Image (cartoon, rainbow, N blue to C red):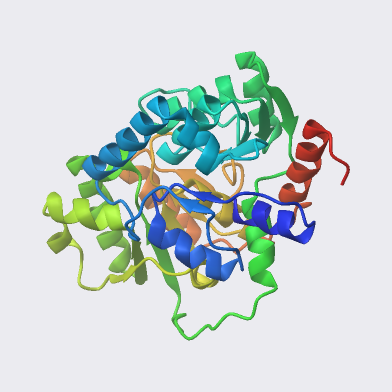
Length: 351
């Protein structure tokens, strides 16, 4: 949503920035990178990320209860001027934003809408969250023709709008224009890894397979493993942290500009992150998707491979990735600009 907010500022269109607080530390860094204002209101007073399932459930239920029984608070503090509430993707923050806006009588626009895995339990709860939001949103921005087709097939009640690409394309374009230090980039060829999805990190067997794969890669080349807070928590909980090879360079989350510089320089990517799958595709980077299913098609017809926790798939990927050259980067028309143009048409305001 950062590039959408940037575009709103460039066009002098007023907006209210509500930070759910689910990733309070991460969003603090993103505001600096994207030159964004401080939130008008934050729904989580503790300035750190929510890292455990239990903590996330408590946070969600507390705010759900408050919004359910204090509609005046919603209208006074969150939506004092009405308007249209933009929610994004498939997180608990997305579902919470939908519920709060609906309780306050505010219309909802769902950005990155129409993505489907067609399996309610994989990813869980993301697939169910997307379905709930898509069925209740007034405006649905589909980032691909396939996403648009999914929404049409669901016969959603809201207005479906096709957008050429996802807003992550604008994030990458913004990073290209910034001067970013490359001191943290290794001189030798390296691979980049991340893993954070709940269906993987909460499952000891799956997470153990990921650790085994990372160790295998680290035997032949340098591997940098960017560890999210929840991943760190569950690696310790499952007693797998000590099984990571000492050859793996483990790093905490870094600012987005530094991460994208690292991503752009890596030989290939190992990740279960949806946005990282998109970024890898746009940058022409080979990516092994550490999931059973993915709701995104980005890169699957070119350089991305769905792992399905199959050792044969990963072995083939690692062999082939050493033989192929990086493809050219993909450039798209600004998705954020398209979204804002349609938003203004929807609410009846001239650009």
